[in-house]
Image (cartoon, rainbow, N blue to C red; front, side, top):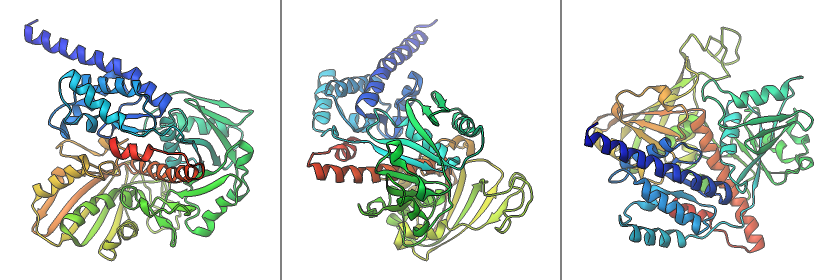
Length: 491
């Protein structure tokens, strides 16, 4: 073996060893003190040493070069020593511009982390999933994965219609295995007598009910809960208000577009419109969440005169597997065999989050025979002429350093296809190589995982609602809370 080969191998093994040393620190910070370490949005909780190194390698897209895992290890050690509490800790942002020498680096990190307030007085917010379909089960996976020490969002129950004798096993097995998103990362146990599912230490009560108004959540120790309705059965205020009649419910979040006067929220765009006294909020649709952040960036930079949104969307449970009667036009034809032209309200719904685009967008959808990941094609006429590279650089920067970086991702690989985006937690991913610009005419292609990306957006809205509730509790007790400030400073 040549010296160069040996040096490369030794350097790699040394980095692997440092990543392995970081993993217990990452786990302890997350488990015991609700600190969420990540690298420019790429979470490194419950990851292997190789996955941690991949996140550090990815940082070169944002900063001048690859993030040094030795620097991250030191930062994690300082965070552990300072007993940091309740923050989203972005190691990439924290260490960007930090000195290279060990003493200077340690002083730099101590100053940055020592200035952060801690969220020691946070109380958990109970969450109930009303419905346990595609979105409900992904929300459960995300909430269980975010459970940490149980001081944030706490999944307490799911409410479903009774499915018969083996209902509990079937619900647990659908959570355990997923044909699109793979196996559940962890362990799942069921208790027939108590009617519970235990997932990675999160005890989930399974409640059977056909009427949301009659469920007594307090009987299960659930109080001031946020109920996430992912059934799609109710879209208006009257129907969703049924949840508020149940004992133990404080607020309701709908995982679908809601009818006026309900507020349709796209996290990253208009979550600040949620008032503390809003008891029912809706999270709009997956397509609206995917395109609105990109449209916001483009409109702010160049102005959108008008445009058309064409969605190439994976089939959903609303369609038939084989031809059969359906109340909707064309949706009765086999989803597995056809491209199905149908309507979408996503283009018009954008205006509920971005009122400045009212009346400027039209839209259609084509359902295609894939189980997950969709694409929105934004065909826009702008107020000014643009160049392709100019637009791509704008969107690339927005995905890396802008305030919408948790909503927008950017890719410029010539080989990516839809399955490459399964599990992507951004609302939408711009395909830079597909961008077309000709004068004021612009076409932008946006991929999105219409299941997982949307579910991630729903959880972000949930977290915002929970922060409001926590702030109200703190105001009553007059205790300081620093979680939101810490998130803004480092996360």
